[in-house]
Image 1 (spheres, rainbow, N blue to C red):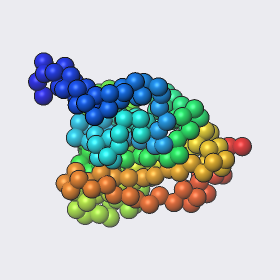
Image 2 (image 1 turned 60 degrees about the vertical axis):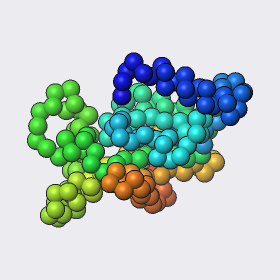
Image 3 (image 1 turned 90 degrees about the horizontal axis):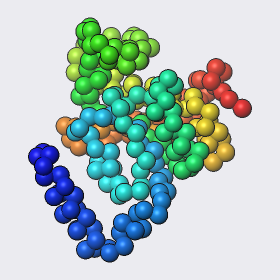
Length: 208
């Protein structure tokens, strides 16, 4: 991408939108009412709105390396709080992707400086599921399975939050675990069982 052409591309995009609907941006500026909070990876190949076919205003998006949800990450926690409590989204999606650089780095024994604390959380996922993962002989298949398990664990982290638990009980908020397959372009639904996930963590993380 030529950085100097971005404003030209923006003007062409504005002209295209206005040609179809002269009031497009006036309407867009009135506010947002998204139904989905999408938590995904910052990878430049994985664009949330494009892969879902979402239009502006339809998805509230948070992205970071390896689609992590940490209770120590004020950015992620603030996004979840705002999306659930104030925007009142109906769905939260955690979407990982195969061939994720963050997950790959977490599988390697390298000192990556400032990235170490972030990757440690992914390594914790490996530790929790090491019996299953260590049985997978093929490196690529083990890598892909860790991507899936990481998504599921981040969904569990979402379910640990107070606002999500309240919204689940009071208005049926749903949490989804997805993986984007870069090789095919397909979205894969991991079919997370929310009730089972909550049951597994309820003894420790249940909030009134």
